[in-house]
Amino acid sequence: MQLLKGLIQEAAALGSPAPEVEAARMLTICNACRYCEGFCAVFPAMTRRIDFNPVDMRYLANLCHNCGACLHACQYAPPHEFAVNIPRVMAQVRGVTYVEYAWPKFMGSAYQKNGLFVAMASSLSLIAFLLFTQLLSGSLTTTSKTGNFYEVYSHNTLAIVFGFVFLFAIAALGIGLLRFWSSIVPGTISPAAGSEAVHDALTLKYLGGGHGEGCNNDDDRFSLWRRRFHHFTFYGFMLCFAATSVATLYHYLLGLQAPYAFTSLPVVLGTLGGIGLLIGPAGLLYLNLMRNADHGEKSQRPMDRAFIVLLFLISLSGLVLLAYRETSSMPVLLSIHLGVVMGFFLTMPYGKFGHGFYRLVALLKNSIEKRQKNTMLFGSD
Image (tube, rainbow, N blue to C red; front, side, top):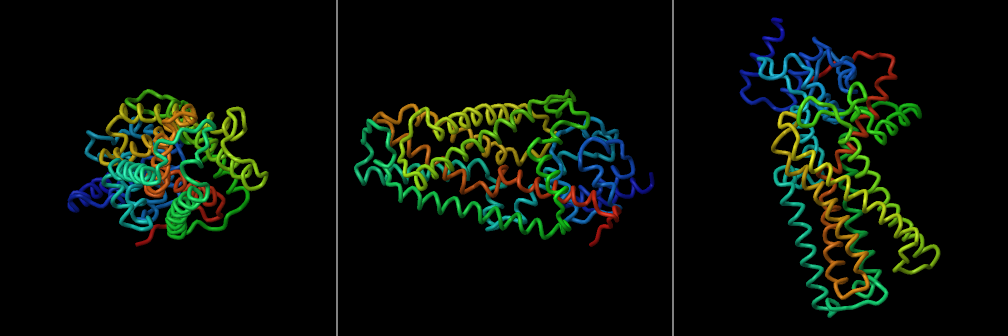
């Protein structure tokens, strides 16, 4: 008890400590209690340590799925003087992670502070630019009876522009992940550890709660809807990515030119993915709006919602474009859709989309760590 009181006094003396310091204080208390040990991957990983350095905290924060169960189960949660709130402090540390490892770093900082503004401003600027180029080329009033987008923008133009944006997003996200991976010193990857981490990520195992009943959202009731809406979002996105990949193979490998029939594989995959990306983000936005304020960091909500809103707008604009591709509205709708898509990819490495990859890295380290012979790890300064 004296140790715990000492930690509280130390935190008070620091005024407003860095998130990693506050997280270390809370997890030291959790390590003494261990009531939540079976709730998720964080607490078993915590018990393999007797001290917590900032890198440890960033790893554990990204291992946290923010299900909220530990907060409602904790006997030391506010208003107790120990003020243990693991979901909030882990969200704060994740925010530090996204900025610390971001490339370029100023983008991570800007997106953290004004995520919704940056995302929407980027998309609207790109939409305005695309419409302006159409106005100059005279294609703004093009009416296509075949729904051919290349009558507005040539295939080479779209390939070059989107290729650049996509490669930038992959490079920025890849550099951030490599920095994170190197800092947490994950160890040797075995096939068993790799497959377990991928399985846990794809099934969202730890959004099932400690007992498989789901997450807490607005109160202490358990629900699986957050997990379900995440699945709609992720697999909807993957179906859309598959549609683009198949269309690329059609074009370059088979010599089949767009536009493709409504019954073709690219269109069917894209439509199903689009529906998933309407249901998932709409559900996640509703849950985010209803979420208990103690389950996260309030200042990060604009960043969270920017990601959700952009995905929803990508899907909505894509489905509307598909429905009206053979009308005079097609050029404008195409510019809106392309602008939102490019805005999403430009901001993708710095927001909630990137958190899935950081979490996968953390899950991989956890799987490796569980298999290490020396299971007690010591923090360092």
